[in-house]
Length: 58
Image (cartoon, rainbow, N blue to C red; front, side):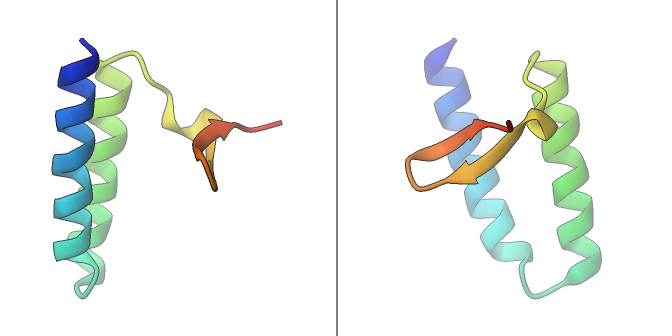
């Protein structure tokens, strides 16, 4: 399961990088990432970026 999440993270990262120049595409990618995370049981809204990666919001 960890390997699948790792691969998914890499794919999301590459896709986000490619979408950065197109606001409409970027919003579509963000929605897909949220949907994919939620389907995997990961609620991305509960996290925030940090130097060491994502951490739970306080």
